[in-house]
Length: 217
Image 1 (cartoon, helix red, strand yellow):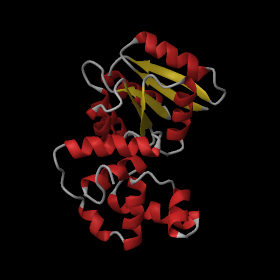
Image 2 (cartoon, helix red, strand yellow; image 1 turned 30 degrees about the vertical axis):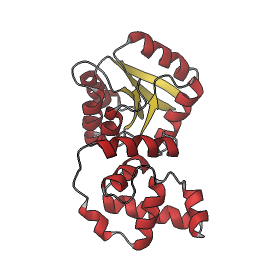
Image 3 (cartoon, one colour; image 1 turned 180 degrees about the vertical axis):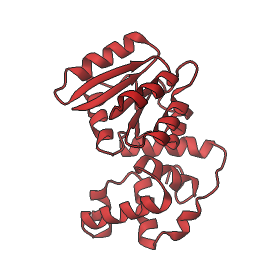
Image 4 (cartoon, one colour; image 1 turned 90 degrees about the vertical axis):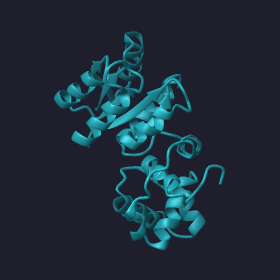
C-alpha cells in the first residue's frame, strides 16, 4: 500500500483527491494538510510514501514545505501540483526536491499514475513537457553557479546528461548510443551521484543551468 498525504488549502480539492486515490487497491490517503507547515508536521508523524503538494498555500508555501520535507525525510517523495503549467514555482519545487509536477486539472488516471511513478523514484512529468517547462523557466531565471561536480563527469556521462535534458528515456538513449539499457542505467546512476541529484527532473535543471543544452535545442 502506497501511503499518500494530501496538502492543499482547499478542502473540496482534498476530498476529490481522496476519493480518487482511496478507490485504488494499492493507494491509501493517510492524512490531509491545509498548509505547508501542517504538511511538514504530518510527514514527520505519519511518514507517508508520497505527498501531493499544492504549491500555492497560505503561510508556509508548497515550495518551502517541499524543501523541508525532502531534506529531513528523503524517503518521502513529493509530487508538486499547480494550477499553472508554466508556474515559476514548479521549477523552484523541483529544485527543492520534488519528484515531479502535474497540473491540478489532470485526469484521475494521470494523477493516480503520477503517484505510482513518483513512488517508484521516477519523474512524474512527461519528458518533453519537463524539458519545455524547465527550459523556459531556467532560461528566464537568474543564472546560478555551474556545479563543480560536472568536471568529474566522463564524456559518456556528460553525453547522457544532455540526452536526458532533451527528454530521452533510458531506452531511447540506449538506442541512440548503441549500448544496452543496463549500461545506460549504470551511467545514469553514476552521473546522478556525481552531480548530487535524486532524479531526472533535477538532472534536467542542472543541464540547463550548466548551459549543456539551451531551450529550443
